[in-house]
Length: 364
Image (cartoon, rainbow, N blue to C red; front, top):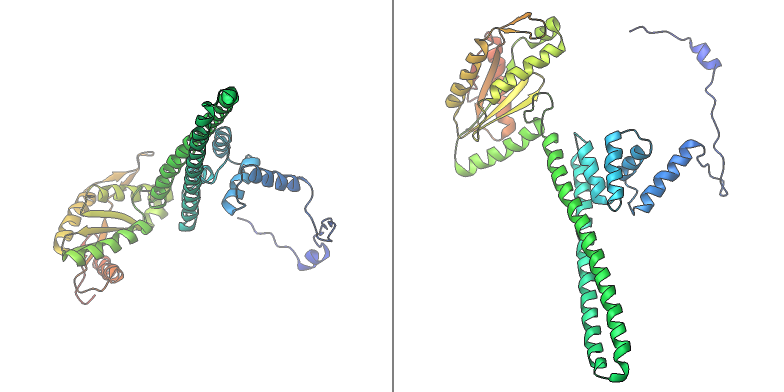
């Protein structure tokens, strides 16, 4: 990468021109040009579909009108054809198009779904009131039918009332059908978004956030049930040299290989997650440090026994090893203390020659 130097005198001599915006009747600057047209179109789309001008709704409308996301445009078109954009349909689109979602985003989507449910309850209540009103009208007109002079007029009124009731029922049924489909779609998309937010994209293992939640629950359960709980931090040995020698793409493949080797042991009692970089964390529920170390050593020995090569080039990669530190909950206050102890044991394993698993001392 080349860096071109520019003299400060030249920069001072060429100020960037500032374009003044036109003023409205109140003396305030107003936008103009193509982006004013886009602004108006976004507002119209929000207004026509009774959407609040939230950042999420505004973003979906902006991306739709600028055609910056073809798949999103297809999803919006389908929503518009099936009754219009709603809070739920927008939330579903966001969930499908987002890989990582914040808790705030998920909360707003859930709020949109709750609003849709409230609208459905209101619709059902209104439909119930319409049925009661129809019943009162029938009761009133029943007595009118007994009078020969008003029979024809009464029959006409009943026909009109019945047609109106049938049409209202049809409209309610259609709205309930659309809302039900949207909420089902939202539920599925929220579940998928949650899975994506909890998964490391490179290895497919649970990520750090998922680990934190699982570890907190495991600690709580271990204390309540008085069962052992152990944790291990694994680190691929000399990983930097793999990247420096063969490149980051090969480094990624090495991470995936070790991840899959560790995940083969995954079970109800063993939880494997990517901790970050070339580190992994294993959670052994119901197992003491000795049993956990034995399980981990089986994987370590299997991995270190293999001579690997790069598939695309046939070049030899050699042996890949990892080191690990194991700690348990006994005598430690919380999950942070467990992780710290395991990390200290890992450091000792690295210092003593790598390719080994050490158990943390009680004092660590």
